[in-house]
Image 1 (cartoon, rainbow, N blue to C red):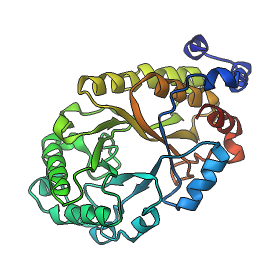
Image 2 (image 1 turned 120 degrees about the horizontal axis):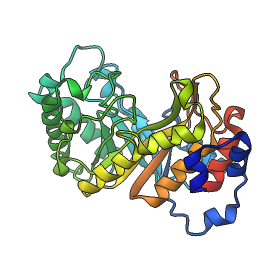
Image 3 (image 1 turned 90 degrees about the vertical axis):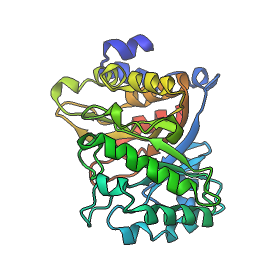
Length: 313
């Protein structure tokens, strides 16, 4: 099977991947903590997903608002998860979109009160052990906390937020995930805040092809693994800092160059094998059709990928 993934595959090969003997996958499958993002959703929706997947979810993804500080501080939605038994992995924005804030202002302490309030609310709703994806996908240019513009201020601000939140009584067990995206673009390693301030080193990974050369699913997967700042880089960087890996967002998508097959079980199998073979603490499938692309495995759009996901996870 490793050979199949490495050298390219025909449609017939992809079908064989889907039809793999299920027993061989179940024997010794090191199922890492399994999570799902359902658009914020509810515990009932998670239980529906569990019934479909045939397995227990341990982690649930959600996000604090990044629209304004007022919305950021509106945390009533946390009540849904109080006593649910699920551990939250939360996207925590470093800046909001409506006030022209900067990393430099954050580093000076201008926004400390918002993060203190967030920690207090997490404790209030029984989420003092939540995982916080602080400034997620900071290597991209699509969020205002883009790190490469000023990595020094990013690091100073990150440390300030962690110190502020952990100082809240009951918030000592909050965990922080340094979480770039697999691309496009590199990862500014000089934006790493230091081992004292990071608990997980994560990566968001979506199956997208941006040009015809990457239409082949095996070639695409090889690039994800072996490309610069790909999965092997993630493995080695995390190991060098003694940190476990996470995949706070991952999924198939319908956003591809002409000729690519969105319903891609090769990607599902590749993620399963990488997760089992490496020090992955938790992984969250992005089961939500967002404005930037569809991802729902339970839709007919990704039928074969969904069936393999149920077998392997």
